[in-house]
Length: 75
Image (cartoon, rainbow, N blue to C red; front, top):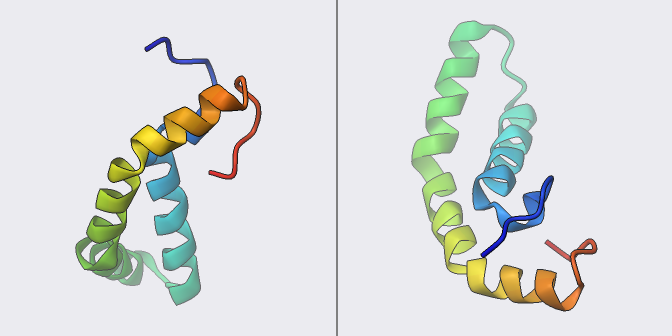
C-alpha cells in the first residue's frame, strides 16, 4: 500500500502517543520523578489494551481513508 505523506489517520502509534499524552496530562506530574512514574503507570496499564484495539482497527481505518480519497476521517 502506498502511504500518503502526513497521514496520522493510518498510523496507530500516532494515536497511541496522543492518548498517552492526554492520560499523562490528566495526572499533572510536578517533577521528572513523578512524570516517569505516571508514564510507567499509563504505559503498563490500559495503554497496551488500547494499542491492541488501534492495531486491530487498521483495516477499517484504511478502508475509511480510501473511501474518503485521502481526506480527513473520523480517526
